[in-house]
Image 1 (cartoon, rainbow, N blue to C red):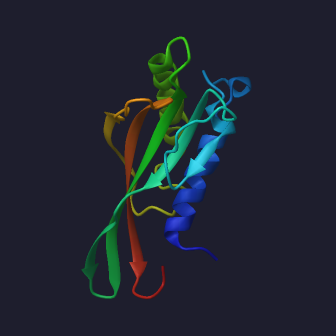
Image 2 (cartoon, rainbow, N blue to C red; image 1 turned 90 degrees about the vertical axis):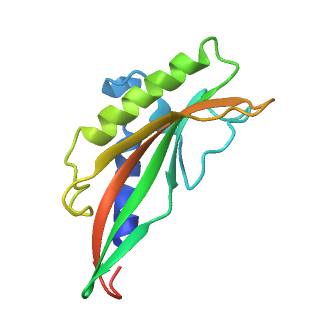
Image 3 (cartoon, one colour; image 1 turned 30 degrees about the vertical axis):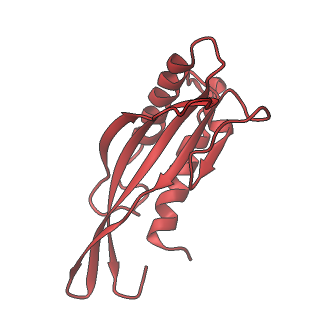
Length: 149
């Protein structure tokens, strides 16, 4: 049995992996979903991908329950050498929103109340970088019993 955080991340990954043109999406970004970091796309990677990055959780202790907010950033990545890399990243971002927001906002009960959409930001591209990207944040409120993640 996994923790609530694990359930949240697994549910997000499951939703993102369905992103395929054959399933009605604009891209095939769901073929490559990275967990934990937004890497540079290399020569062996597909032209677009998705990365799930967990940010700092902010707890607020209440009696025997721990209420916290878990921000999860999902990055839409595209290779910079594409004809229109930013438009590819925008298409991946739209697919991410559809896939994540299509079903229930509790992520199968892992999230207390419902998750919310946070900021969307352009990822800074370092000189020589082969990857462009746009990141969207989802805020996931969770409640854990003390000692029972």
